Image (tube, rainbow, N blue to C red; front, side, top):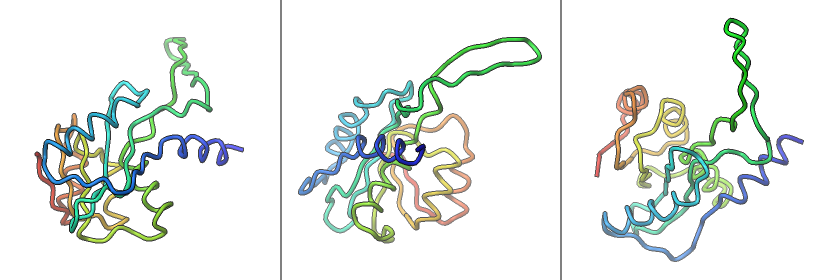
Length: 161
């Protein structure tokens, strides 16, 4: 089934390593860079969730194309253009949040920090708001500001680092 294949793909993306503590921006950026190297997506994004109290790594994820779903066929009926490509990637923020929920069986608390290589897109911003994450730190801007507007309107503290 599609759900079983998705769960199999997601389980391969889990990078939880207990007892990893990250205190400095350099340590966090290095960890994000290391995690993003596993991505098979063009935009090699990585995300980690850290405890705000201890700096303990709680979960992580990276952008990836679900391999088990094969190629997506695109056909434009106006131009008769046809091409195959990988399906849209699963976003690192969603993977990290699902990984956290699966492991800890509870929603994130307000003291948790989400660190990511790029400011979240609008869809990820909505999910971040829904699960209750209140602190985001990012390295690079996104190509539009929809996600940023959602995060700011939701009262989420976002800062570039």
